Length: 68
Image 1 (cartoon, rainbow, N blue to C red):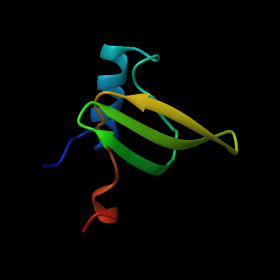
Image 2 (tube, rainbow, N blue to C red):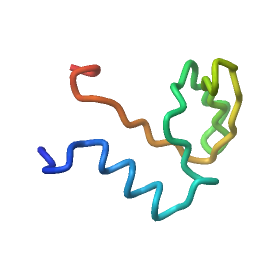
Image 3 (cartoon, rainbow, N blue to C red):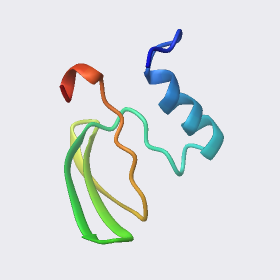
């Protein structure tokens, strides 16, 4: 699928809809730990620091060239 605005537009629209407290943009993920079906720990990098977030659900968005 190709989008006129580019694939980043999908993440941007989801973030706009859900809000900044529920969607973390521009946080490079370093590790994902699926502790159980509804408890996911994500380690990301924020301003050069490693930060942990907990989530019930996780959407991974990345450039198609990275997963081919």
